[in-house]
Length: 231
Figure 1 (cartoon, rainbow, N blue to C red):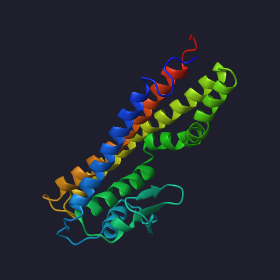
Figure 2: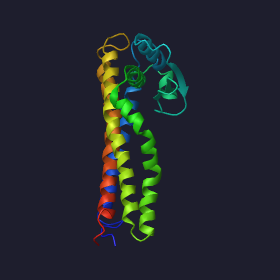
Figure 3: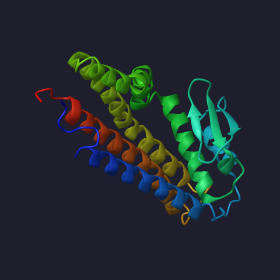
Figure 4: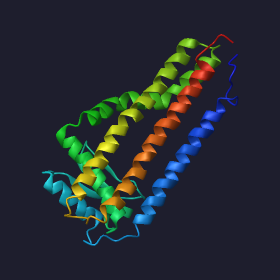
């Protein structure tokens, strides 16, 4: 009934998305490992750099915690904690300081009420719904004899995931911009080390761009397969 089929020509879109995602993942890991070998001249650790940045931004209430994993760093606006991975917390590398500064950028966004960050937070419930139920609804629609209502609801729910990822882009790029501006002051890194951080943060930002492209291609594929029932 559906002319394109799961493994028809549209499957090429999945392959393209996978290649882009794998390249982005390799690129960020390559850059982090490269500059993780460069020790900052100040000898400041990721956690120390984060504390310095937060205190200077008036965010003494934000607690810095160590979390397991590699590059699992994140800022939690709910409990106001900056969670630094084991590869960042104690490391004095240029890469670790850059990652820590990026997460501080999110904390500052939260403090200033950065609109895209608020918009992303507001989308979370709908995105969770879309992530969990979009594909099951589409498949249920097919099982029930091409029920277009269920299929279209599923596609719209999946579109919310794409929207969330698009809104995430300015949040991540802005956090990196704030981090670079702070580090360019010379209090943590010198002028020779800042360009290295820029490469690390650009590589990290490209993973979000890759995620948008990959998910958008999946949405296009769903529309190609299920969006038209004339067949």
